[in-house]
Image (cartoon, rainbow, N blue to C red; front, side):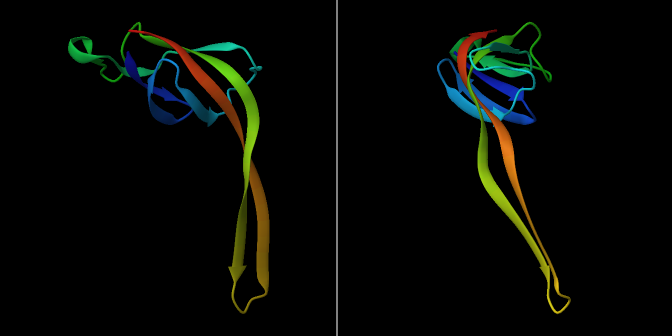
Length: 104
């Protein structure tokens, strides 16, 4: 079964067993299970349903495999002939999740 979910400000097309990297879920540990209730569409073939905008009663269960930080992104700003240079770095907090079941 396939589903389209909305989580952490992004949309993903998922099926059971998929591994995703999303923005970190707050207050979660490695090995914990989360329920995603923002399911936009789910099913396969004749049983495919589309929500308006969400499917009522549909959930996706996922397990957190790892909480980590992403690669460092450097933001460098410069204004020519003014002597202004600014260098900042950022590392995004990420969660690696595995889709365990889709209930539509």
